[in-house]
Image (cartoon, rainbow, N blue to C red; front, side, top):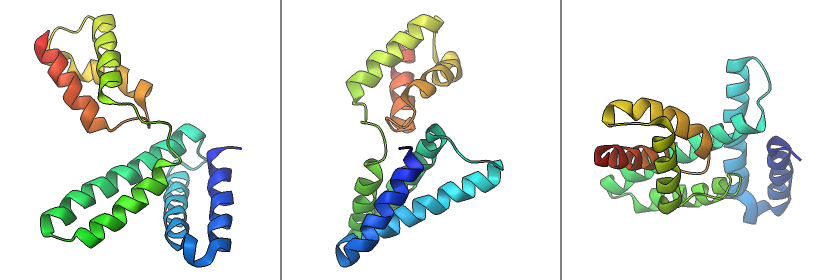
Length: 151
């Protein structure tokens, strides 16, 4: 079963759950709308990798909004977004921790022979496809910058 089929099935289950599945239903509908918009933009159906990108983008948007809500003292809205993120994370692959990212980034840096921050773009270009959907791009960027500054 591909990811879009799984979203449809989970949406049906949330509809049947009524009150218990209201938030889940809302989140799934929103992510399916985002997927549909991406399909319209591209003019074709999305593959699983592209659907993962859409879901990861939705998670990223919510994380950024949480920072804003916390800054404004809106803890209730931040908590709601955290619940939405937890639902979306069920559709993403298992997330990498910082140690795994460091190992992979060090490997890519050595493979490319990167010698400093000037090679950041090359390293990120080679590394991001390997970690797609499994970690936050900001974290990867920070780690790569740290490692390149040590070279």
